[in-house]
Image (tube, rainbow, N blue to C red; front, side, top):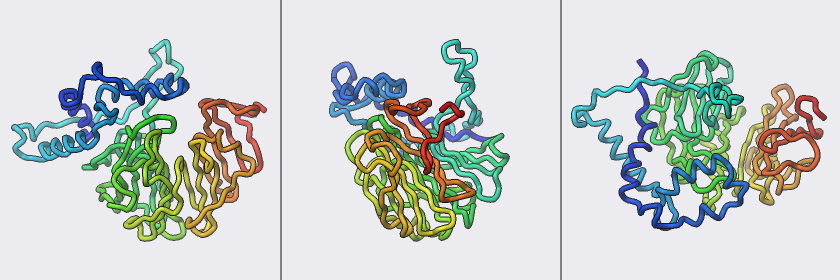
Length: 367
């Protein structure tokens, strides 16, 4: 029998504490929730966050995360104690992961069976049946049969929110998991993490790395160099709120023990190594700021230059994801997300367009 990871229930356990200690939501006005444009406030994702977090904020409009962390640590210690009021033998059966079936809901039946957000995903370099997944709020999961079944590998991890997973190509038993989820167009650090975790035994156990980027993180991407397993590149972004001091591209040369920020900046979305040239590293950033677009390093990730020829203007690049062709690493494909449709071309969901190095690529041959 697989036992449920009790960590995933802890946020609910503290709700009572929050309501008792925080001022009544009706007695205050948290103005930050009213400062967003209608295009953001009308999103269902924003409304969910507002419904949950607004009543739990203090007079300054700050979610008391340090208080929650203290309560969580106290509860974990209680659960690990053998004298926990006689409840140490209480067991949970793992029922997930499983999708939610909307087929019987007349309003959204076209959604079919859906899961939550999976922001971290890594496939074993030599065994395609081994896959690791890190949802936005559900821990680390491993499949050994190509995704048919999944095993919870979260263990005693302090946080269950993940934004990136990377496997060492030279030794697939070594896995890095970056905590915290970047959520473009949403405020506060609702999905924040507490750093990087490393496994050297295929996810059976994890060690937290106390790195230089600090204890509050929102990872968007991470990659281990296919040419040198000691070199790791990671991207840290932030949600819409006060600037975070660790935003940017970080680099490690000792297998994740120490890190240095090689490219400060906001909106870092994704990154990748060139498969045959160890000196080339690709980075994409968004947030509609002047640096938004595509960046290229020719010195192994120490410095970067712009490679935006053919891309939209920076103020139309909210989030950008890309991938490198396996057959020809000089060809890259990118999806660019914008708040509003770009003029001309084919627009799909979320106002995104698909681009490649030689120009616009029409999806489904609709050009």
